[in-house]
Image 1 (tube, rainbow, N blue to C red):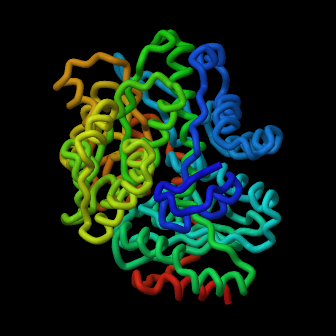
Image 2 (spheres, rainbow, N blue to C red):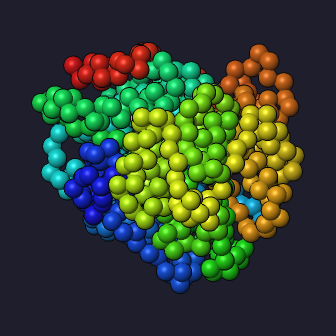
Length: 493
Ligand SMILES: *Cc1c(COP(=O)(O)O)cnc(C)c1O
């Protein structure tokens, strides 16, 4: 069963939690108890493939679904990846490995969860005998939107509606969404930033009058954002898989800790790493990397979460976030699952835009997490530096984490092996990456820049990007943040 981080909701099983998203008390659902996977088993599974690991880890995290149904969902979801390893781990430099999470249909790590979520949603509908159409609402900082649209495209009994910040996504990200196919897909540009989109979607979920109205229309709201436990669980898998790959190649001994450096925005990816650790994976440190919107880095250093600051658009748009929703799940663990304490902090966040966790929670936090950040200039320098050192091209998000990792090592002389979590293909940000490599980009659009990048690095432009300029644009509606409900109702006729 699953409980709310704010303690005010009746415990639910996995199908309800997946279809509900946010708990009715405003909290996030978490498993009543995290399962353990013993070290001996991690060792003996060693070189197993990604889908075998997914069966094992998701079987433990989502026991409500039958092994056969879950297995089939996993096989179908990950067959859409262009690399059969799904999440290949490749050596980058001595002691550093790149976990490549960008080989899915939309070239970002969101695909790992969002190719599977629609299957989990359909299974949940069946389990609950839910006949209503699922209205999947998504707020996106760029990558979630496309991945959700692609995942839910033409899935029967579902409709996917995406809200993205008009000025907050890269040209390729925007075009990926605006050219989305599918009879059941809808895209709206919102005048505002990601936090406006996310807050707007959260409000829609908490609007009882809207829920009633949708009920009458035979619809039910469902979230594909990482507040949904069905997004989080699939992300735990690749941390186990990465460690198993290191074991299989003899890079670590069983039980030896490994650090992970994670480019972080909404805190979903790195939280999955912490869940893996709580489930028994030998995780050393989790390096939480932010861009200039470094609320998290400041929080991890000072214990104060403070959103009262300017918002910046950066080279790493998927991390341009001031309110990291999934942090609430970590807070719940840090205070010993004291829901009243979480409520107090969240109330303070709502009323004053800030909260401070006490020294006790802070000391637990610092045992594992470490936060740091990199600005755009550092990020661009790092892309160039890593290319010169290794011949590999990082996307700006991954480069932020790479910068933070280098700084950590310089400061601590820590030689523990580290996995750098690579969250997007550099071709999603072609022009910025090309410029970072010191190439002339004047007069090039993103797609011409990708061609240049391909010629320079000898890596082909992925077909998901190369074909984009030839696809018809299907959406173009721009709305104000206050018009999200209206927009939603407009597509229901
Ligand atoms: C979403 C995203 C992130 C941030 O992940 P969170 O789970 O929100 O912390 C980082 N990089 C890329 C490329 C992303 O799409």
